Image 1 (cartoon, rainbow, N blue to C red):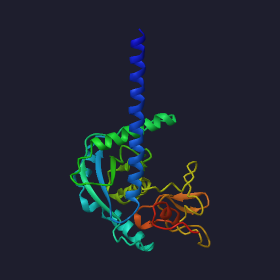
Image 2 (cartoon, rainbow, N blue to C red; image 1 turned 90 degrees about the horizontal axis):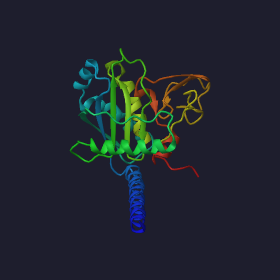
Image 3 (cartoon, rainbow, N blue to C red; image 1 turned 60 degrees about the vertical axis):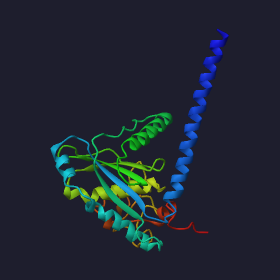
Length: 266
């Protein structure tokens, strides 16, 4: 029995060592990914996958008509904002459409513990790796789940993970809402390179001053544009509206610092 017990203990220790090794590799990989994607010495290669989330014919028809040029406004937004910050790289983001993906990503836990969230994050990153069928190397994967707006009035929050460089966007399969969808894609894309939200999660109101496009405007309200990581245009002290397109959005200084477009003021 003593020999068997020693074997059990030895196998347990081996399992712990393997787990620690995996966690170390994930941590190192995350650090290297962050460094590589925020040095801006070359365009950030972003690949977008479309998923028919509700299985509807409306979503399928919309996906079937998607092509690479449909996402040009995302590239143009980052190009224009980079110019405002005098970024040496003229085209900081290169977006490619990889087509439709039939498999859906794992859903995040509802009000889960910290451990369950970590486990889900690892599952999502593994799922993204399994479904990486794009023939060229990419930096960021964005999976867009499309819903028929006639059947689904509201969708769950989208998300972007810096660890793993993965984004999951819930969007509407509608030409009228395409540009609004792209605001959300750009928001989650920025999460993957280190930008943080700039709105109050209790009210969804933009945080002043970092969540305002023009915090020095007088009078302060209504704002004409949204800060990308605030996601909403502050039209009054306690009222905000969703931007309809990226032309109604700017990338603020706090976000620029977070993604290494702007040096921290001394």
